[in-house]
Length: 210
Image (cartoon, rainbow, N blue to C red; front, side, top):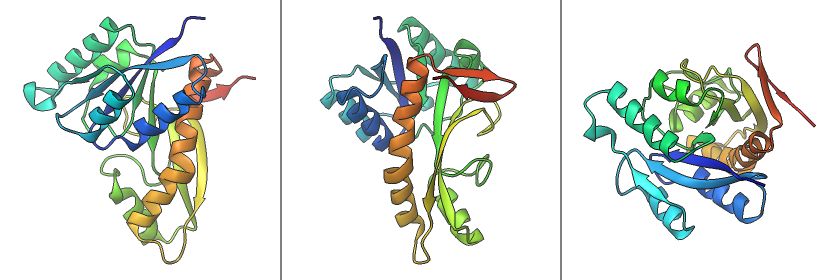
């Protein structure tokens, strides 16, 4: 069976990339295989993770391009040329435009460290998400894998997993627990579902087949 080629886009340490690499090692990405890692800046540890796993990695630095449009075009061209079937944003903090979405319609997944539609949208990234959740006093938070659309964090939801919020949590402890108990579990699972042809999108909703 032909494997579906996966590109993982990163901007930092690559913990979610590592979760995907580990899942692939256990045979848990179904018909998918990570064939390309693209970093938005040089020197990030995610590149080291790709190298250790023997996965082709490339730096497409945002600073090397004059505009978001130029960068997005280069990114889309790179992935189309590599025959990519699925794009996964794993801590990718660089703004891209519709050229990427149009090249990969309903084929871009993102993991967000909250239960969308809570604590999402512009400005909600990294520790800011967990600071806002703790400030609100929520009793559960969690993670969401969704399909990426031009509107920030508003695409169809694929999977969600709730995580208990403890009274003594700091943004850092909550971030870590959500990664370990939710993100690292549902992101590989969503990739597997996509690569095995189990995901259908209709009226901005995701339906998962048997």
